[in-house]
Every structure is written in structure tokens, then in C-alpha cells.
Length: 425
Image (cartoon, rainbow, N blue to C red; front, top):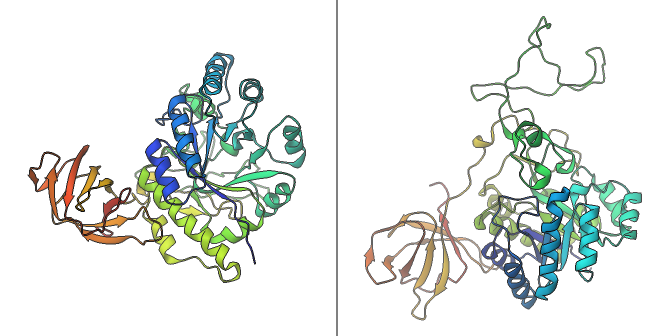
């Protein structure tokens, strides 16, 4: 039996993270361009940097999608138009633009007509008539709402190419169209400047006319027997009324593949190289296992362990599989903090010495865990041997933001490997 796997699409906040995503199994990455995307505080890419990444990706038969997915006012349109003109002049274009706004769609088709357009989840394609409408205007692929069920994904995927989120943060607003930040501080989520007020603590107080302290968290009257009560838990940190869990779809991966979606997408352009490497690695392994033996597929503990070691809130399959308890009533700071990344191997010299870019202090003699760039190898433990500076001086302990040389490494380390804190430390 031959299984047609969907593309695995990874976030990439930098060139370094994009290369790590490719190394660990991503078929494509999506990146932001300047301030014209929904992650305005991410490092993002300039047009020359985008062209460089596209060249690298195409040499590996991989893809790069560029997000131009803010919902702009007239004031932002000249900047978007200038960016598109620069891309057209550069001669090295991304494999698709991700767009939310009809006006931006027009500009893309005017200045870069050969580049396909993917319709962002922010635009909200909730039905087949909407899909047909945008297809008629030249949109090729649709990033579907997280609010869909598996059956809805399968039905709409029969009409065109679709992409669905499978992992990462979720928003309490419908497909991310939230106005809380704009209302309270002028920081507009639809311009990429979301302050995430849904993650904050809130104090619950009874209304002045209420005779009890009980708060009914439904919009219906108390006499409505069909209304649902939502939990409000308040402790010394406050109450978290709108704090969503994180999406994790490993357990329903076969069902998602069978929907016919063209691509499976990981959220997180603000995430670290360790986060992206670990999450891509787990889903790549799962997809490949499913392709080899669909009927025998099972979720391996190794994949789950890897996803537990990255920073996340409690996981859910979300609306896809009918999980309606999506609220996380504890503060985000109480979720698993993840594993500290110690360094990245930048080069391995001819005599086996490894040049390491230090991200967090470590010392000679420390036992660390290595996440190999080669995804056919499992993570393994290694002891840090002697450490020297680039000028050759011996170092007992290293500080962040510098290059050091570890030697000898007995051939264990390769360029691109990630050194991280040993589990349980």
C-alpha cells in the first residue's frame, strides 16, 4: 500500500532555525517578511535574506513560504507593495505567499504573478462556497481554521489544496481574529502585535446586584437547562479564563493524513531552534512510520517524550477530535518550562574537535544530551571532555554567546547537533 503523505511545514524565525527544520525533516518552512506578518516581534526576514534561504531550500528540494498575512490599513499598504516589488526585482521568489487580505492578494498578483498564494487561517475559510470564491480569484491553497472537525477537513479538502495546523499554541478567538489588545492598549493582533491578554490572570468578582458569589460563565439565563458552566478556579495567582491549551495531534495523525489535507503545519515562528528541531523531528518520525505501515501505526513513547521536553501548555487535540475542554485554568508559567539548550555544533574539524556555539553555560565533565541533526540517530548522552577557547586556552566552564572548541569528541558530534541539558537536571 502506497501512502501519499502531506507536506510537513515548519515555522522558522531565522535562517538558522529554517536549516534546522529542514535537517530534522520539514518539507517546507514558513517565514515572516519584515513587519508585514502576524509575528511582528519575531526577527523575520529581509528580502535578500529570503532570497538566500530560498536558494538553500531549493538546492535541497524543499520549499519556503513567505507570510504577508497582516490585515493592513492603508498606511501599511505602501510597505507591502515595496516589499513585493523588491522580491520581483530580486529574481528569487518564495514558493508561495501566505495572505489574509484581499487587497494584499491584489498586490501579490500585480507584482509577483508567478508566485502562488495561500489563504491564511486568519482569513477564515469556513465553507466550500468561500473556498470556491477565493479559488476563482487565484488562491491555490487554504490554511484551514483550527475550529474544524476531522470530517469538515476531509469534506473541504476534496475541493482544493488545504493545510491544517497540527501542533502549537491556540487562540481563544476565532482563527486568531482578536481585538483585546487593540482595545486595551492599541497593540493590534491583526497587525502582528498581539500582547496575549488571554494568557493573563483575571480576578472574578460578583456583580454589585448579585446576592451570591457564584458566577455563571454562560451567555444564557440561569434558567436555561442547556447552558454549560465553565470552571473558574482562582488561587493566589488569579484566574485564567481564556488561557487555551496547546494543540498536539500525534494521537490522531492517521486520521489527519486520511482527510486528504495537502500539508500539516506546526505553529511557532517565535520558538527556539530546540523547539522547532524537536517538534519537527517527532512528527517526521511519526509520518514516516505511518507511511511504512499504516495499519500497524502506533504512537511511540520516544515521540511523546520529545514533545514533553519542549516548552508547552497542556496538550489537546482541539476541535479536530471533539475535545471541548480547551481551557487551561493554570497560568502559563506553571507549564513545563522545557529543556535548556546548551549549544549548537557549528563545525567539526578534521581531528574530531567540535566548534560549539554556546547558548547556556556548561562545564568540562558535564553529562549532556545530544539531539543529532541526523534524524536516523536517536538522542544520546555524552560527557563534555576538555574545552578550549578559539585561541587555545583551557576553559573549565564556558559562558553564553561565544564559540568554544570541545575535544576530543570521538566522532560522536556532527555539525548541526544540539547539546541540551540532560533529562532530570
